[in-house]
Length: 172
Image (cartoon, rainbow, N blue to C red):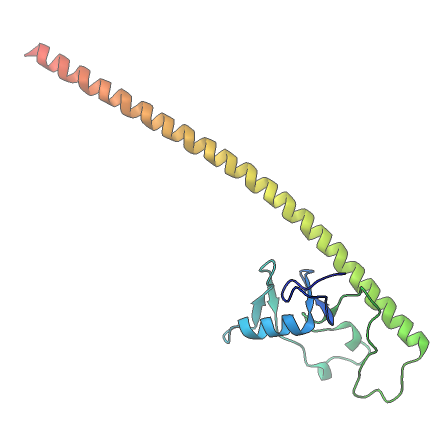
């Protein structure tokens, strides 16, 4: 059973952000409301700090045949169980079995795409971490070598000053 990283309970009405992290709808809504700045329409994913736009398009400006494909950015449905029946204000009758199958198939496809995207981003993050660790080790080696060369330079400067004083005493 999948748990929500915010409330640490089983997912209730699970939704996924564009970055692929999945939360309870109520938890992520409350978090976004609490952390959204008034000067910007962008907030950040609580897990990976990826920016998430909170601007939602006006559904009336979207052609009816495209409305099912345009969802608010934090309202992508994650399927680990069958989806709840759609609640549409203009829908007076229950959808046919064929329509429900189409909706379920579309949601399963979106969920699979989100999982695939999550795996791809995780692989990129792992590569980034490996590169960062390699660069950190290289930086430490360069700093150690720099300290060693500085100490050697200071030692040679002391010897030079000693010899300079010794020869200046001899010339007098």
